[in-house]
Length: 305
Image 1 (cartoon, rainbow, N blue to C red):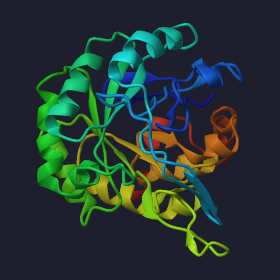
Image 2: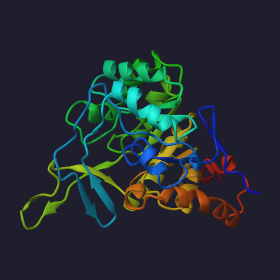
Image 3: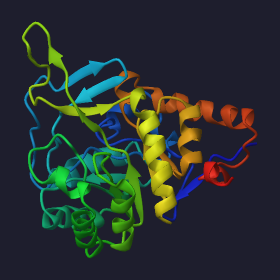
């Protein structure tokens, strides 16, 4: 029997699979399709202090390697998440959940995290310092080690829960940003977020997305994710949640060999709602095929020459 269990920041998970924030809502919609307790955990919709209505439509465009999205962090705000979404989730999901937090100042990140810190259901706080399609300071925080550290310190001061900083592939040196987060008290990092992209409507001769640009995700992103996870693994000693273009159990193994402890699955859920269920079901057979007994033992395996 193979062992798919991993521990992320001290919390044991049955497997490393985590539907990524913004692709899985608050979970209960997917619970109508399959038992979401089979997941390692999931990262819920990016949550801000105030309710956000997101960007104008169209918000989604396709490209040969995946999707562009410019949803713009649409969410009901942290108070409504705590009052309404978490109680609904509790009925269908009985594991610690990952709370994804966005903000436009270090103080706002801290305020939202402090409120979520009091919620028993929340196991980890994933702090999104990298969303590329929001007008405001969001993109800047993850681009620079200093501002990334500022947010990390502000959040660290208000919570004892594990904090995982979600990093942007647009950073000039993502390993330096990861190191700055670790030095400022982060328990982990997740990467990569989407990469800003754009499509143009040939008939209208205008951008396809109302927001002009959107975050690129999908299978075309996997080699970039593997490279960045590999780089960051060499730079930090905290665990990495690897994501970007994962669609198969083989992709999971590849990112873990690059250095990831757990794996986020994003766009695949939007294309195929059963994507994570299928990956989890296929994982043991893929492990056996490659002679892997214990997933924990392969983390960073590509680095040991």
